[in-house]
Amino acid sequence: MRISKKGPAALPAQFLLRDLVYIPAFDPAPAVTCDPPPRGKSTDFHCRQHVFLLATVLERPWLALNTGRAQGGRHAVSEGQTSKKVKCLEDLRRRILTQELEPGAYLDEVQLSERYEISRPPLREVLNQLAGEEYVVLHKNRGAQVAPMSHKTLRNFFVAAPMIYAAVSRLAAEHARPAQIMRLKDTQLLFRAAIRNRDVAGRALMNQRFHAIIGEMADNEYLMPSLRRLLIDHTRIAMTFYSPRAEALAEQRRVAADQHDQFIALIERGDADAAAELAVAHWELSRAEIESFVTPSGMRIPLGRVPAVLNGDEAT
Image (cartoon, rainbow, N blue to C red; front, side, top):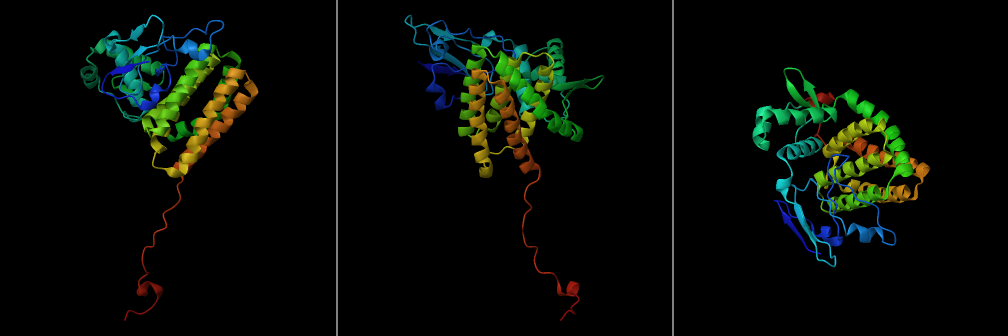
């Protein structure tokens, strides 16, 4: 297999570990899907026959893969095939999730039009879609505002998260399709790669993508809107507290990655009860990380000796 890229970002070496690299999009319902493997063919063999190239956090690198078929076929995707409107939508999602656009910030339509080289009407269509996905809030005469995170929002986040994650994971184990499980495995590869590279944004975004795919597996139109908003705020919170220099959290990161592997195994096995229980345990791990950031240990720094006059002693 040969991989080349077009774009400003270099691919990490570990992306060469598999004949297929699935680059996830931020849209939980990507346009490109994979059929189940044919009878008698393994999942890994079947993966080598497919190429999924969608926008990603890695500055939109594009791959040209030789999948090793007898015909020596090459699959290449040109960035020019993706419209400017789609690029704008994907990049705004990324910038909001990584807090490049901070919660509560108002978006300047003139600046966005210039940045993405699109006119105002398609830009407003993008903003309307982001509003429907709850990335932004539209205000009359004030434009689009990045979805804010208030104290009330955070409280409701902590209340709702375990219920939603558990319900979604249970349904995912009951309804997951082979193609979705393959995509979940590929996303897990990217998640572990981001951890190894100490890539803060990559880790947060691949975690978001991992759980979005689980939501897609659940296939429940009532839960998906709640999960989508939950993942937006969870990712933004993670961007706030996560630091690759925090060695004290290294063990928690390892456990979280291992739990992702367990999710895949349980969903593939169809064990709904165990998947729901794991979702609660996985959430508790995230909650502990957030709490350790919000309530850090106090600094123990001596402030010096108390002046003698304050001790009731006479000055000499």
